[in-house]
Amino acid sequence: MAPVAIETPNIAEDFVDHRDGLALEATSDAVDEVNVLKAAMRVENGTATQEEVDLYEKSQFDAGKDKTQFRQYEDACDRVKNFYREQHEKQTVAYNLKARLDFKTQTRAEMTIWQAMEKLNTLIDESDPDTSLSQIEHLLQSAEAMKRDGKPKWMQVTGLIHDLGKLLFFYSAKGQWDVVGDTFPVGCRFDESIIYPGTFESNPDGQDPIYSTKHGIYSPGCGMDNVMLSWGHDEYLYHICKDQSTLPDEALAMIRYHSFYPWHSAGGYRWMMNDKDDKMLAAVKAFNPYDLYSKSDDIPKVEDLKEYYMGLVNTYFPPGEGQTEKVIKW
Image (cartoon, rainbow, N blue to C red):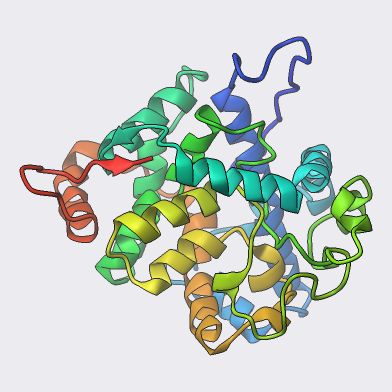
């Protein structure tokens, strides 16, 4: 993943009329870069857990990669600080309740999984005619890395679709801040495990007599299924797949929690977990290297792989009567 320069928004433009896919992808890549560097630094300085060492150093496809190719951690953080300041100010309980209500009461589009992949190609890559990889190629990289390592087919299809929630940016998002970035619970005190925890000072929930307490609206052991995570492309796709696929719980957890770095990497919010979440946490930890590091793998040939992955898609998104592919309500 090469270092990127985040496009500076033109404040004279109306976001509703100008949704720059290249700028969104630049922000998303910069966020990933920070998380890669965090993991590498923990491994290198000996503060990583054994799980993290196994995850980032012993994955078969990742073992030969040079983690030092990325920019220094401090520089990477600088590129995302303003993004996180806006995200941390605007991700409130009130906003998240409205976002979920809008999701449940509106259908933004109807198309198959492969059509959604092609749509994401159009929306993001048309902004950058010189882009080296299409969105479909990025998604296939993750899936192919899992296939090479002998991961189950449900995990391969999860790798294939895991970023399709970015379509949200072009349908009903308010900006980049409610599409990409690390996720975190709302409705309780913002934990120190969140990146830039000091940037929540403008979030009104921090002054709420309930939301500002450690447990807030939750109780210890409530289970992650009952936690409201900050709205974005992961949460959006999770709800779509939960209602319209036969993917197992582990796959749904990979989709929903892979950006929840305060939990799966920094060790925060463990008080929320129930017995099921131990298994889900292990699944997310197994997934993440394929998300972060496969972006620098060889370029897959889409036409050579399409038939195989369409078969997987149809297995976990079974077509309805008279359909050759399931039409998903987005």
